[in-house]
Amino acid sequence: MSGFLDRAKEQAQRGLAEGKKKVDEVQAHRAGSELLKKLGSAYYAERSGSGSPEATREALGALEAHINTHGDAFLRG
Image (cartoon, rainbow, N blue to C red; front, side, top):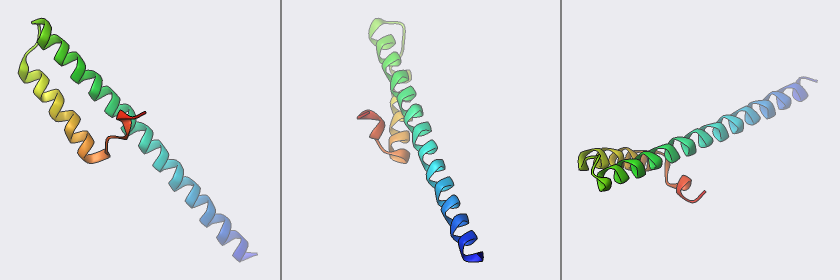
């Protein structure tokens, strides 16, 4: 009986770990999409005369930092 409970506990822990990993992926995807949106807004503002090149560079830097940390999968999905 103890072996069964140990296996059930291990399986539950694996399920929790997989679920947390998926939540982390979804959150990183959303954050990346938001940073990409901010970059687009900054670029549009710069090109239309109401923004600055510095704001565009900052938005690009934030996006690049996110990609370096989490990858660029959000760009494909």
